[in-house]
Length: 293
Ligand code: GUN
Image 1 (tube, rainbow, N blue to C red):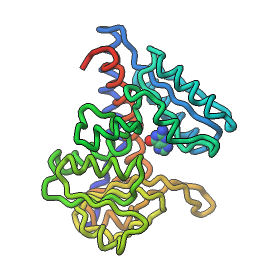
Image 2 (cartoon, rainbow, N blue to C red):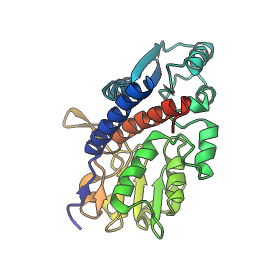
Image 3 (cartoon, helix red, strand yellow):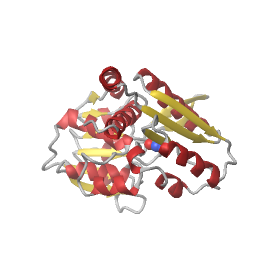
């Protein structure tokens, strides 16, 4: 099946951005309420700086109150937890995101668990993980990357994935595990693969839905893909090619388009959807904080 559908995450995110901006304007005129997003970055990781800039820009496009807190690379746990405490009680802030990874003197888990679950727009707090895992997806804040992937999968296959095999490659708390929960909730038969999986290509070949989230450039080859599958590429890998630096996914995109029914490109697939889901979660947090549905 040559020339698979290229799933345009950038275009879909732009559509969703207009809807969110419209709903934000209504919230402002009807309830005098502006969703507030605080993004915290510690240190100067160049990739993190790009992500944070994009998040701030998108928040502003949506009409949000958007603040960024930049802490120095040698910030202590006391510094970070103090800032989160302040943001937890600040009524203008509805969503808090601490950009990961953090410098090694900081305990990532303690930091993410210190964000109040009501403002945990990343969906990393155990309370939100618990709700998602228990199938209470309406009440949980769902991590942004899997939430964005799910919307693209639904566009291709509908909301009910009964009878379909889904394979998630990667078992991270940010992507792999919550992705598997969402697919299971949609009735797919789900397999999570990782570095210890035996014969990974053979497992992938069974997938009607294949989600690659490992962080290894072009690891998933064309002959790992079942003809007609929907392939979601979560990888964002920077590689050198012909003396130039470029972004590439975890899937061999050109080969995948020869086999799959639909594939997300990198860039322009999952990335923009992740950012827009953060805005969606923040809008929802603002509504909930004010007793609105
Ligand atoms: N670093 C890479 N992805 C993410 C994400 O989704 N959230 C946060 N906070 N940091 C990240």
